[in-house]
Length: 279
Image (cartoon, rainbow, N blue to C red; front, side):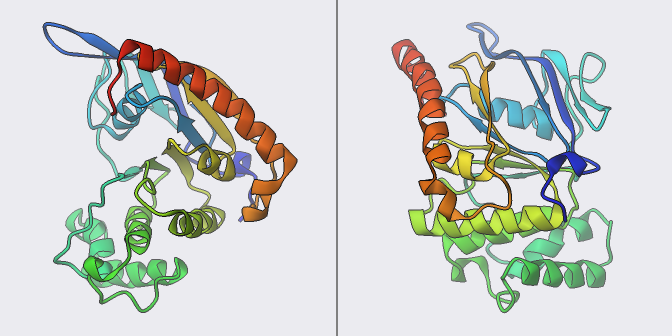
C-alpha cells in the first residue's frame, strides 16, 4: 500500500459553497458558503472552535441532514445539492462518533459483522469470516467472542473502526473518536489508525480539538472559522508518512503546532466573545 494519498482510486470529496441554516423563528447559519476539496486517500483533519459547525458539515456528508445551498460530491457523483438536498445514507461513507455505538449484547465479532448481514450484502458466514480477519488485522485476535464491556474504551474504539471498515467505505468520517481517551490510549489508537490507513488507503475526514493529533495524523489540517463555519486556513503537513511518535519532538512539528494553534486561538477568541456554547 502506497502512503502517497494522491494514488488512491476513490474517496475524493468536493464540498462546494455548502450552506446550512437551523431554526424556524430565530434562524442561525451554522455553515456559510464553505468549500473544501479532499483528495482520494487523504487524511484530512478538521479543527476549529467548539460549536463552529464542523459536525454539521460531517453530518451533511454522511446524509444525516441536508444542505440549504451548495453541493457535495464523492468521486464526481452528487451526494447532495439543489436537486437532492440530503445525501442518501450509504456504506460508502461510514461514521465513527465520539460516543461509542457498539451493541453491548453482541460479541465484538457479531458487532463487526452486523451491518453487511442486515444490509444483505454478505451471507452471515462470509460476514463473520471477514469480521474475524479484520479484527485480527487490527490486533484484536482473541477478542472476537468477548463483549464490548470487557474491553477498554480504546479497544472499543478500535472495534468500531473495524466495524466501519467491513463496509469497504470510500470515506471514513470520524467525529472526535478519541476525545475521552487518556494520552497513552490515544497514542496507541493513533498508531493503530495509521496502520489501518496504510493497509486500506481509505479517505479520512477527521474532526478533532487536539492539535497534536491533527498534525500527527493528517496530510492537511483545515482550520475552520467560528460560527458560521467556513474554511479559515489550510496547513499542508509536510512531514513524510509513514509516521511514528518520534516526529512530535521534531522542529517542524513544533513549528506547525505553533502556527495552527495561533490560527485556532484567533477563532476561539471570536467564539468566546460571541458567547458560543460547546457543541
